[in-house]
Image (cartoon, rainbow, N blue to C red; front, side, top):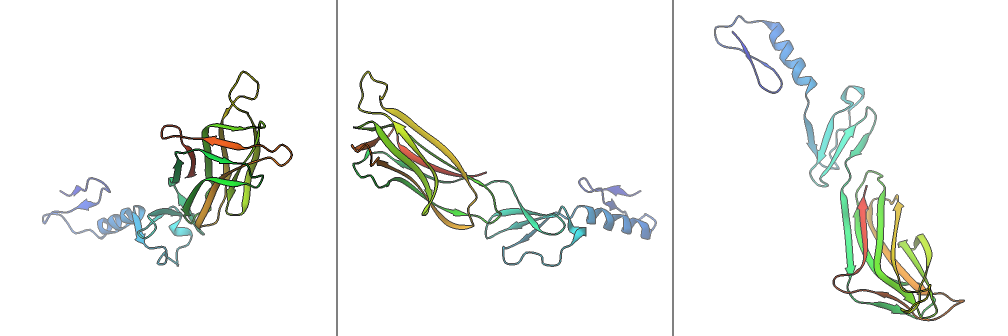
Length: 209
């Protein structure tokens, strides 16, 4: 009397069983329905897959990325999560009205055309004349610019303020550099300071989502 394997339920014969071609055909059909994950590299992906391979996965050993074949193309599965983080633990200060870099994160963007979340923050930002310009850049491209009101500490509406901002980007694959920048404002002047220490850093974080 034949038995069955645990996972795929293949027919397991004994020497006393009657030979049946149908049993072998059933086994091959079950195997075809459970193809597993095709292991390759980014340069040795299957090139002849078509509609019948829809839903099959490949694992690239060189990139450590999982892809699914949708019947006509490969699509990335699962986000990589955090791919870069930089913390600066000392104050950044400038009187320049040209943007200066407070923190930088150089990251390697994987193939797959996925969005990335860039988050920056610091415990306090202020300007002696109460206005600071802030920005997030990818390379030379500005992703976000904004102003922060806040002057020296004191009982006024312009007390020092924490800073936090998140933007989403769709970068091309390869090495990309994101920066958190700041400056005084030309029409206002003064000196802008982003405060930081070991427990309250200026930071920039990049996540694939």
